Length: 140
Image (cartoon, rainbow, N blue to C red; front, side):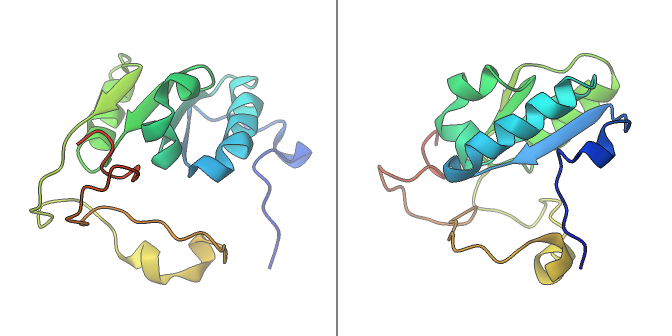
């Protein structure tokens, strides 16, 4: 399997309008490196995930748009705004307990080519608890 590096010099001539990243806090340094690499090439960068939710002020220093909290509603709104040429700096939409209408492609969760084997465990949407230390429910 070919190793993928989002900041490899083999991509130096590539042009993208938009780069979207999701990161946990422990991956934030790498996410910022990726953002800088692509912003230097003219791309608009967006970040979501636990890092963007918990440290949104810091993320705004490195990314054009930050999506805080669950992205099922906020990400499509961001994409619509981006296509229309008027993306906001920050997005946040509460997601209720009814996940039936959320556009989640579960095929991505079962296809190992879309992710590597990391030792990080991430809690996400659907957890009914509101632990004070948890980034998932920080803004809820």
